[in-house]
Length: 137
Image 1 (tube, helix red, strand yellow):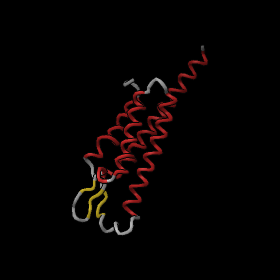
Image 2 (cartoon, rainbow, N blue to C red):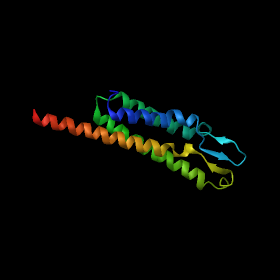
Image 3 (cartoon, rainbow, N blue to C red):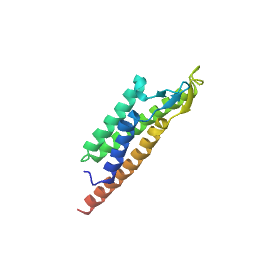
Image 4 (cartoon, rainbow, N blue to C red):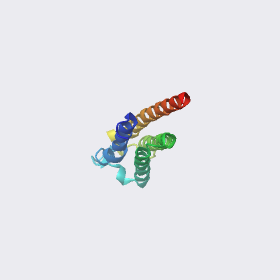
């Protein structure tokens, strides 16, 4: 249902993982070229999985437990993606001189994680509300 707040959070997470990476560079190389996520297959796969999990979570609004589990899996996936971004920008030998400036695209997994945590909090609140109403019956 679109009127629930967790759907709005999930839609924003979809934008952060599915739309914005096409426009925001991960970092800028020393020669001035932007490095987008599409230049590395691992980033494409991980962002694609994150976007897919977000869409499946939006569609499965009737099954709150499944939606909650998908949100947690998506958080873990975005943490892995963030770890890969940090590893690539800091520790790859010989690449520290080639990466001159970090782009705003590196922070998209953080935005997605925050939005997914807020969505999971709202899903948990809905689940608790339904359980309390079931107790009254």
